Length: 167
Image (cartoon, one colour):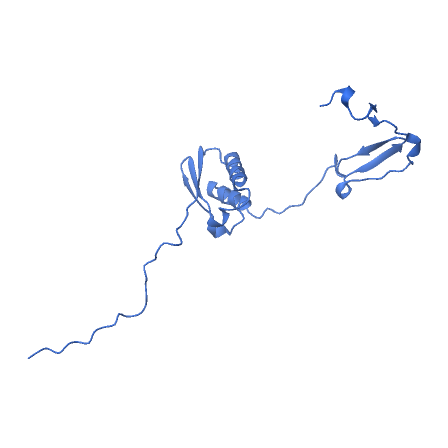
């Protein structure tokens, strides 16, 4: 913060020095993202602006169809995992052990941007909707892709011809 005596320009009532209101035309230029700003009244040199959404303060009615009700804890956990993890549903695995929950993270998510934030959001959601849980563990399993795999072939082993017996 600068002291008033070291400030680069003297200011009066929030206007820069040399500001002349008569040089500004009586016009309203609205600079807002996606029409979120409404100019209510313009007088020199001040305009009154409303930054609220056009539906602010109004009652909005929705017509919805409930497709599925998540009643069991397993359904709720699966629904919350589907919401946060961008992978195929068949790759989501979890195990509920009383008050503990173990979530096995799919390999596709290991390098996901913001993975820790995603995990924290999952934890917050699950604790919010399933109050009996005390602990949530995330399991990440890594496989060694360079390990030698035993060769399994469908070829029959070559048999040696039988040696004739000596008489």
